[in-house]
Length: 205
Image 1: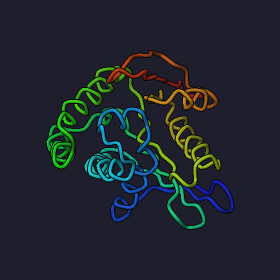
Image 2: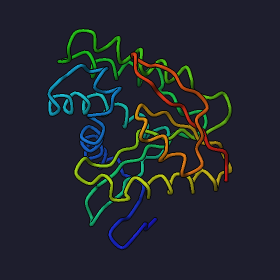
Image 3: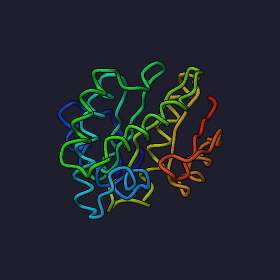
């Protein structure tokens, strides 16, 4: 899908996943949940820890769903993960592969915090058939240029073609209004690791 003359959206190939991992680790390193879960003050060090975490996450999602990349002037600028019905949660094997990524080299207590965070999000996953959005991020130096908007429009169009419910979680209040512009509504709010989180869904349009 071509979003504009300088922005193109397409599904990523396996060989491009490592680049996507790096982008997510930069674009989401200041998200409240990531800051709290990894408890690493230095932003660059936290970004490296997140790269270890997102690597198995993306490889698992690549097998279960879709990962769309937004390319700005030929360079990967944004990543949007999409899990289909029945594929929202990682398999047991994927969870086991993920554990070393949060245990090795991180501060004491990181593993139980990450497990509490991801477990709470998994617990709230809707029972209804749905497509799950996330992770979604724009590279840190390219944010607020319409790239996230283009990726979200692409996700909604794909899900509407399937006449399906959409669902997402966010730990950033400023994102709530952004998602509402595309038809998402807040279905629940709750604290995760002591911070507010919003859980949102969108019926087929």
